[in-house]
Every structure is written in C-alpha cells, then in structure tokens.
Length: 82
Image (cartoon, rainbow, N blue to C red; front, side, top):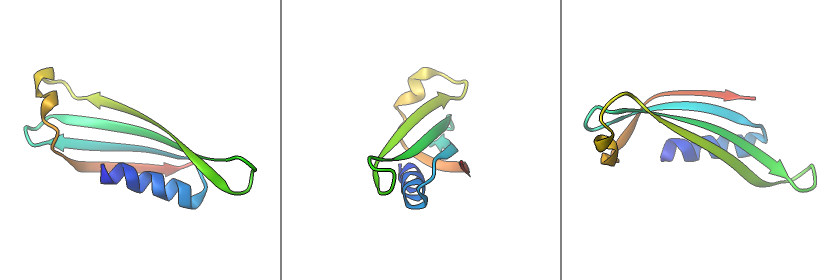
C-alpha cells in the first residue's frame, strides 16, 4: 500500500499524470501486478484539487484460493511520469 501512496503523492507534487506498474510477491509466493494511472486534476487550471486514480490488479497464474494471502512486499516497481 505504501508504494501506491508514494506514487499518488509524487504525481500530485509534480502536477503530472503518472503510470506505474508494481509487482508484488505474497508470502506464499503468489505474484500480483498492480497497474496504476494517477491523474492530478484542477478545478481552475492552476491549483490541483483532486487526484483521479485507476488501479488494475492482475494475478499471476496460481490457485485463486491463495488470493486471501494479503501480505505483500514490492518486488519490482516501474514508474513513468507522463
């Protein structure tokens, strides 16, 4: 979760859209990919007022019953300011 918050903060502080892909590995070895699009927006064209965030989580092949394993640690993090 802290990785996602860091992405949102950096996009907001830079006042630029951001696309990020983070690979997570659970304790049981299941790999997850979180893809985020972070769009800082402004009501008046000057001051940022809101951040729109889209997240897609993709599970690596493996039994879905392991989805309950919620202990993640970032394994790889690719970020691109747009």
